[in-house]
Image 1 (cartoon, rainbow, N blue to C red):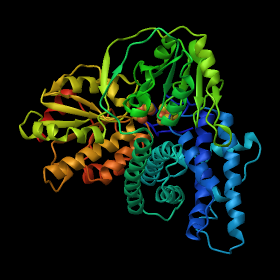
Image 2 (cartoon, protein in one colour; image 1 turned 30 degrees about the horizontal axis):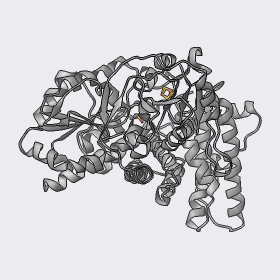
Image 3 (cartoon, helix red, strand yellow; image 1 turned 30 degrees about the vertical axis):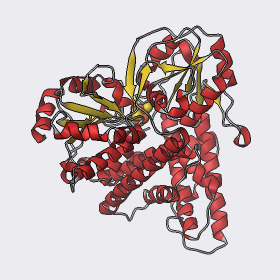
Length: 548
Ligand code: SF4
Ligand code: SF3
């Protein structure tokens, strides 16, 4: 195996024996093979689209399978083998359909468009030969992977929107074009860089789409205080990003005597009006994804993982862990999709919850959030005035991901060290590094404004664009906003590409720069966008404040 798609890549270069995330070598290879299969399908899907032909099954398969290969989403070997076989069958359906048309199909002689799976052993052998390192040139490899990881993040957001019946054809078309392009040996670095930038454009589109999907279905997030303590009844803990699962679980648990709590990236569900009406929706339990081992143990009740990030479970709670959607873990119960558009059936989780003790209290109090674009626009006058009077001197976008590395304490220390006339704008699970610090407020505006999940970074962009308009500025970089972003997995890659596409400069990215950026590709990002890493809190604070 060779995997370097996330921030925890071993030794800062890549995992080669087993993933730091817990992914085994065979599963890592199978994920590579699935990706290869998706590229093969895309070769034909691109041509089909040109000819006005579509295949809904292959479109759905590409998105769902891309999502399954994201860090910490799915560890299930058998599931990946089944997907590889299904993918080749879909590719061959396309082939048959196009063969009667006698058209020239670019890349149709590529092995990804031709290979046929044999026995499981042969599949494993093939899987070991199609990974990241099969691209010899390190810059081309770097650009191909940067594009691929952006597409993976994009697929995740497309899937979250799709479960709410929101799709955008242009984004799907780009996904297929981008995947096929990574097979093309003729593309120059410049052409690949252009595709990476285009990926950022579609990243903006997909986050806007998901924002529409979420807010049209569940209402605009509202400024909300969320309980972080526990009740006395048994509970179910729900994690991940899938709001449709959230809705269903709340509906099915109503009146059962079982409470519902959120974990990690599901915290922002509390901000949506549609979910506030449930009195058994008690609060948020615990912190970011990497705290699962201790927090899932002390929760005492069943846990539902709707999306990444799964930490390989401990035996102490494995029998009360459930996956659903495109997540999976061997030996962990999986709740399948509902049959014929029926809702998923969560009764097994609810029945198990009834037999469990209530959660053990690990903290008490409240946290505040729900500062998505509509809520912030609602208090825009107050925000603008605070900036004009100098009460707020600078905003710091500290969005992205949290992770288990000790080096991420930097973000807690940075937030603590920020001057009192600054405000943190956050989204994603990065917030857990500073959302319980009680940093106070500025004239009633909290110093940590949480917009929501990582995809709600879109809200931060909308807010920035609005402020630019209000202050009559030509350039988004003239706003009093600095960017100190933490990344972990591929959703953060699409968020980053989206910000670059919007022209945001001087983003600091940490705790380490991606291992998949070759020195030359990193230089392109440094020279064109001023991307930088992090150093120490003191040094960075000095740099940031000098720019104010
Ligand atoms: Fe390593 Fe991250 Fe890949 Fe897991 S996803 S194998 S931790 S680089
Ligand atoms: Fe977190 Fe995985 Fe990135 Fe959605 S849940 S932000 S890490």
